[in-house]
Image 1: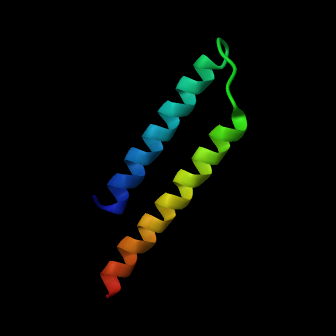
Image 2: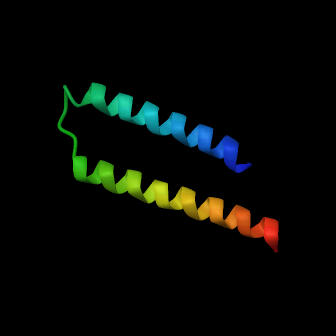
Amino acid sequence: MDPITFGIVFTGATGGTLLTLATLGKKITINETMIKLVMETSKYGTILYLLHYVAKLFL
């Protein structure tokens, strides 16, 4: 999967997840620290994927 498609899919999935959590937040309690941890981990994973893809272009 190329980085542009991956970025579009990742942004859509993140937005959908946050929208779902905002809706559920009114009915159940949500651990905000865990949400931040998952979002940061996925963001760094995406950055590493992009760097890996770019490195393959130059090697």
